[in-house]
Amino acid sequence: MSAPWVVIAAIIAVAVCYVLLPVVADTFRRFRTKKSLRCPETGREAEVGIDAGRAALTSAFGRALLRVKNCSLWPERKECAQDCVRSESEVEEARRQNVR
Image 1 (spheres, rainbow, N blue to C red):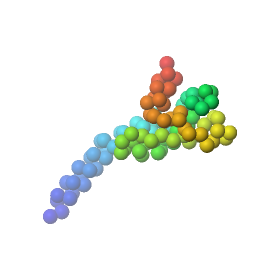
Image 2: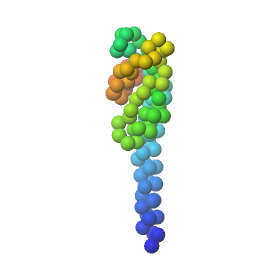
Image 3: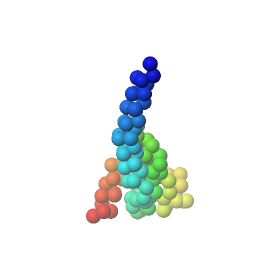
Image 4: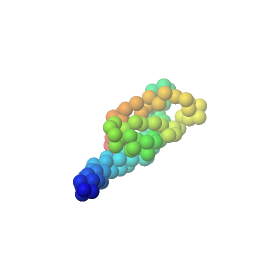
């Protein structure tokens, strides 16, 4: 009687290991370092650190939610709208420009 539950648990474990963990690990790896972005409010370049843990955990359930962990323009602009990381594509585009 417990055999079907074992099979279901095994399927879930395989899904976690081969689907969720690689997505989470890749997202964490992409956002763990500081990025050089242009602040949309001031127009100045800023070194922005993204909360990689939060981005990685939220990427397991859909699109990664990005939050600024630290910024070179802080503390005077600490309460900004964080528009510099509005979408993951903007951060990825900046990353690609830094690699070139």
